[in-house]
Length: 398
Image (cartoon, rainbow, N blue to C red):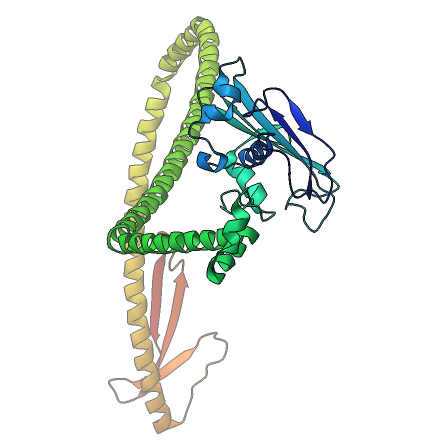
């Protein structure tokens, strides 16, 4: 990147606009007679590059930078430098040769000290303009940035260490050292501040955070309980709503049924007089026919009493017959035993012709003779009502 032109307007001895155009790529010095304005051009270059020490441009007050301090109607001083950006090796970062073939830097100062910086014809900050020049190793604050008149004799008498320092300042390494030291100091101060912050976090903020964590946990539990309560409340409301809805439907159905019953009752009420007359007539008929059933009931009671008495007599007869039967069975068993004994003694059986009787056993009469005992049982209607048991016992002839 190299200087293409310098435009000066109202700066020091240049009352009107003066342009130094089409400067050679090898331009590196200005020569001329005393009082021709050589030094003012160098001062203009330092001015536009952001110099802050006015003594470097041979001025004590900002008004001295304006032509005749603004007493001749010139109230501002402006200097603009155009750079040709055609070498990618020296191009400033962010300003490519293709996108920015020409880079313009300007500075303007007015009476009262108000000033502005311009970068590519756009108002910019002084720090931005300064960083722009530092990016291409131009430090306007370097006292040896520009070799002024009379400086050559001073350089000849310098010591080697001073020359080395001058070269470092000229190439811009001093600025980086200063920036490095500034950055290191800033880092140390920030580290100290960080230690203080860590200490505050550990001693003050830590307990607060733990307390806040406990409060957060408590709040989360509160939120969960609130959500649970709200859910249950909604469920209860929904349940009550459904229950009331069912009750309403049931009440509506009952009301409809009652209304139907009312309608039916009204219809029946209309028919009630005719039904009442019919019921009255029926009641009279029943009252008239009530005598005959009463007599029939009396007759039935009498008949029931007679039947009960007859039943009692029949039961007594049956009981007597059962006793006689048991007695007969006992006698029969006795006769069987006697028969067996007699058969064992006599081994004879008497059978009479022409008779249809059964000989159950033999016995002896008073005269010592054997006799036959015949039993003819006749049982008729043994267990019927009014039944009788007849037992006929005939002794045989001796």
